[in-house]
Amino acid sequence: MSTTDDDAREIVLRPDRPANGGEAVGRLDGRVVFVRDAIPGELVRARIVDDSRERFVRAEVIEIIEPSPFRVEPICDAARHGAGCCDLAFVSLEHARDLKAQVVRDALGRIGGFGADALDDLGIASTPVTGLGDSGTGWRVRTRLGIDSAGRAGMHARHGSGIVAGHSCAAPEAGMLAGLDDLELTPGGDLAIVADMDGGRHIIEIAPPRPVRRARRGARGAAQATRRRREQPRAQRVVEGSATAPHRVGDRIWQIPVTGFWQAHRAAPATYGQTVVDLVAAAGGCGDGVVWDLYGGAGVLAGAMIDVAGRADLGSVATVHVVDSDAAALAAAEATFDDGIVEVHRGEVATVAAQLPTPDVVILDPPRTGAGAAVIGVVADADPDVIVHVGCDIGRFARDLALFGDQGYRVQEIRAFDAFPLTHHIEAIAALVPAHRRR
Image 1 (spheres, one colour):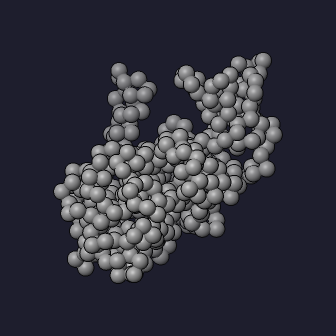
Image 2: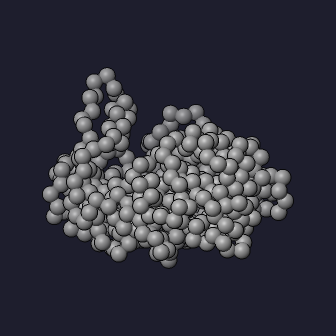
Image 3: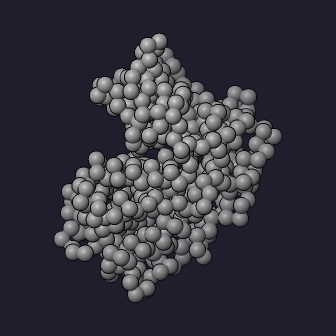
């Protein structure tokens, strides 16, 4: 690894491992280098784009000197033109999953505090990151696009607030992005697009956020203000289809707002539900049948538990308490369940959960920020026999598992999924039981 003579901000290096976030990791003069668009093992020339930190720098590839045998022609046209969607579209699908498995092991060891023996005992080294289908393309049933100043819809740029229009992402299902150039759209707004259970398309235009005052804010302050304004409620209009979309899991159909949350991968809800059931059964079942489904949204995981209630290895499910702060998601749950088993509770999860009946099983499916110490403390104080934790950010997932360890729980099993092919994202699900319980 060396710097070039003509430009001190250019480096040549051979990164040796993947990082959570999609970069490859190498070293430069004792400092860690996170290299975007590189594959571990290949020799690259890169440009340093951020050296403001003492312990590490960030760089972007400008030339592949010795390519990896796993490098492929990017199959996402939008990503190839600078969109921030399919950030691993240049890596073969199977190798990308191998890299993600390495990231899982690294996060559990470095952040979660799992030693080598503990990881080996869990079988992490030999456990793959499982795909939810055979193809890395055409899997997404829910996407969000921006609208540029000319009224054209496109993916958001990887860096900055620009819109990459005229180049389609490879992830959405066939037909989801067809004909968008023919629509009359409002510059500066957003589009929420959903493919429903029958493949029908629903499009909602979300009005532009209020303008940001830039005086005395600086670039960073203006960016933060823009982000806050985009998160605030904005006017919506139905462009195509309807304001809600039907989604089926098993024998149930949920009516979910097009702008609301639903798993992006069509196969994810059923896969996660089956995984939760399997992990609870392997950990001893439901006891007296009181289940907490925290951050439960519309209750998909609750439905999976109810559907197999009474199975010999699972036991009965008397009540499932679904807790979430999303009123629309809970309304969808109430409209879907009419069996008296599901009770919905709206509010901040830690506060609401502390008032619920003692659980036998707790299911946690927090947002990308993870559950955190407050929620984990409430769950541990409730002393459930089984905890199933779903994580959509592997670093915070590992942190949460460490917090559960501090509260007297041990991980019995972990499964990881490639629910966002062509990207660096990993979904993981763990079963935890009281540490004093023997295998």
